[in-house]
Image (cartoon, rainbow, N blue to C red):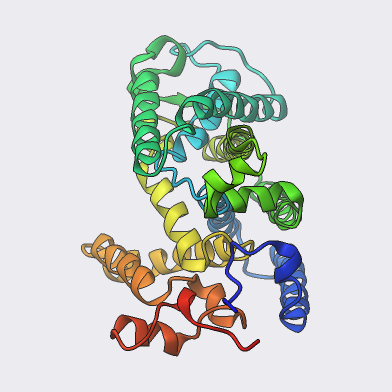
Length: 351
């Protein structure tokens, strides 16, 4: 029989590796508790908490991207647009500047409405773009990202144009950290729950064989738009939180291509289409980038490109696939690269 892949229905996948799952759950709870008590430790100042909050933001964006790119197989090269829309909507609603609309909302409703706007635009754009297949969808979303950024740049009366907008400062780093930690934990728990539902199984069926899923009565367009809209809403929510704690937005920092690249690489590095993969991959990538930035300032982008090649060649299932007993072994991956064996998906398991 074929090895169980991330695309296998959860009811089948749960039959294997129960001990590993229990270990992973305990490790996850332990890490969550450790992160919760971290601000109380001596020597942990605002700079450390701000860095960890940025790491949690990267994790959230990768997890949200994985809902579309990993679960349904639709690679979104414009995912950072929802982050920027959430950030800018929050900034516009909270702005008191003369170059802005001077609305002056409080932060909670501004951030929530920013997420709603991002989700609504994702739903509208998804209805059109998610009828496209393969690279056509990816290119359409990349064009959407560029178009949204330029619209923000030229709408000076509303967005401040290239000057940007400044938000009222409220630099409570522990509060931001705990809010981000709770939201990321909730997002990961939701993803784990979704993966085990009929809805999540249908999303994976779309990824594996969309035509076959349609012949079985699955409304593929409807399901894709729903998950795409939720990913846009959730990413916009974290974009609004980022804007509030950053206290400033402009088109070049709110709409930055590398945010999408990090989400794609984080999901691939950890394990595309899995629950834990984007979390593990985003964390590893975040700290690896910090290390490369500190030691290879002039070559860190080259190193990141080499890393992406290594992931594709040697870690087709990501880091999670290495410890997953149902995944391909590291030896099998090396044999595949050397041309001495079948691809991991073609290898047979013991009956």
